[in-house]
Length: 390
Ligand SMILES: *Cc1c(COP(=O)(O)O)cnc(C)c1O
Image 1 (cartoon, rainbow, N blue to C red):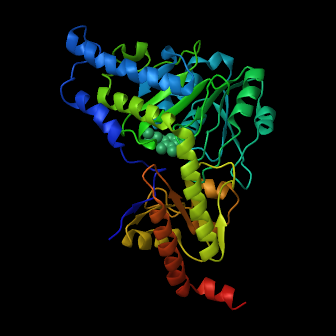
Image 2 (image 1 turned 135 degrees about the vertical axis):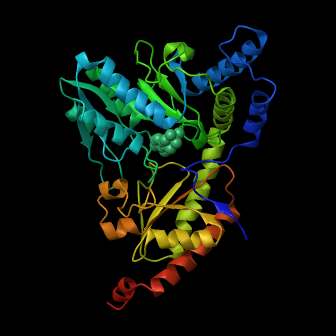
Image 3 (image 1 turned 180 degrees about the vertical axis):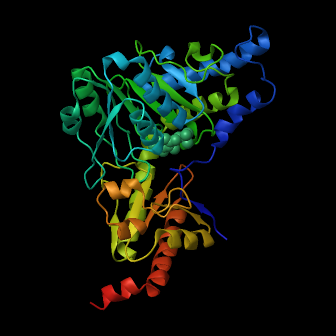
């Protein structure tokens, strides 16, 4: 059976070129980067190179990059660190109601520990404006954290405009750019970004390694205490092979970002056009144009996202739905509800996210299977019969 992986927002495959660069660090180059002998120095050289690759990709300085264990850790480090270190500056944080749980759950924790959090509502496309951010800033605001691009519906936020507002108001600006890094151009200086989270496994790098950009002059305490790694900002022996993989993956993504984005956008549009042509009663979720090149998210009315996923899986297709992000939960995703979707329509959503390895044949296969899936499930749906007999 054909197998098609369209869940690249959850994680991506490891690019063969990236694995190749990691291999020596999983085998011969096993020294501890903190050791002063030649084994250690060899390992350190790999970490140093990755730091250069990442700094170049973001237009950051070398000492502004901290390697972490994942995107979640980067997000946690920013929120907890700013709240602790800059308490005297204020205890008010501004974010949005469609952030990843790495942000939202940390904000909820901080609310229990003396912080005030404003969750800006998004519009029906999943967008917040710089104006909204500006109006929410108060005297005691210390941090604005707005995601670069949403992981469920792919909407890209006006990051440069928000950065400008935060700079004018003297408020720290963090962006969770886990979905955007490697996919869209990012310049932390031009966009006035103070802190940025990213994760290698979302751009064809290895799992279990992330990074944090922290602008010079901002000091965040390390929440993992121990050694002096990462200039005392993140203790623990470096995941050398993972860090080398992160560096290789970001360099690869940036070396052909424009061409990749063009190819991906064409495939994404082919998928969107196919779905809208072949399946009646569908609704695109997220912004139609301000959208990640690899994200497609539709509500297919009158049927359940979970049933769609099961049938896609039986046909070898990996997708994801907004109805049960963590299996076992029957609540629709907080993102789709924040876009104003009624529960029954949020339940019928399916997310298809493309990767560097997605082909035109994959897209056409998915359109075909999705069309048949919708027809079969709707034939069993009393809601749908009611609709067409109206
Ligand atoms: C995947 C993701 C994360 C978490 O990254 P991990 O490396 O898996 O911890 C955080 N934010 C967004 C937007 C994501 O898509």
